[in-house]
Image 1 (cartoon, rainbow, N blue to C red):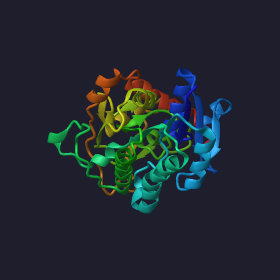
Image 2 (cartoon, rainbow, N blue to C red):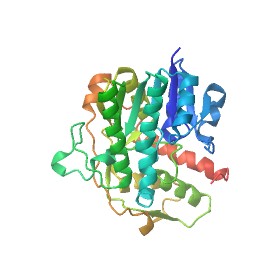
Image 3 (cartoon, rainbow, N blue to C red):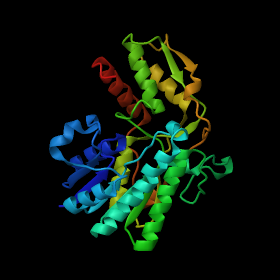
Image 4 (cartoon, rainbow, N blue to C red):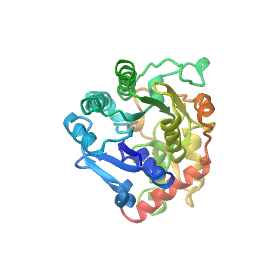
Length: 325
């Protein structure tokens, strides 16, 4: 039986990946959690997985975990991933996302761990891509324009270096916007749904605060994205990069409009731009070409955008009714 170790198991994508692996494989699932991690996203599977206290910034804890688990595969999803705070604490982002990855790889070297590693990067690394270079492919040059993107670009370079220098079996992915239940309200779609749920329950005025709604994105359901991670882990070529996305392309305003239209309070809701939600720099167009990955794996999306948005809205409706936010 394969042993799988997931960094970031308590997070958005990590928890959905855990669900997918439990439902579709007989793998033994292990996860790294920080001492103060919120276990909300994985509470329903705690009796089916093994958790280990550790931190990407503490190499000794990673060494201990690798010695105990001896994983065959490592899904490295642990990261700081919310863009906005990266302008106020860029060093923390670089330490967690880049140095944390070095710590993981060095722990693997110390323990003689030869696990296959999957890493997940971000299209934010590509920066403000000119229209003539859209759609984005694996060959598109990276030019990050925010500290979060810079930290993930550094992480990606670390992966390339350790693959080249030490022959580590590393498969790299760049997943475009993926949405679904469990994403924190710092994310735009989750924030919209959360505010709608509060409005429906009379907990706030019928006003949704937003940032820039003009950006165009390529949207994928998180459940499709984690299935893509699994396929990349199982079939990906070591050292290669794979773009993961879909043909579901919309502006943030279109996404908001679809969510609002699903609400019983749609006629009452107003939209207001909150300057605090507008980023210092905004990437206006993210459209990816996932043909390389599709050709390798046959992967296609299974969830429609309508299904994704419905699941997000119902998730936050349930949370608001329970008084959990």
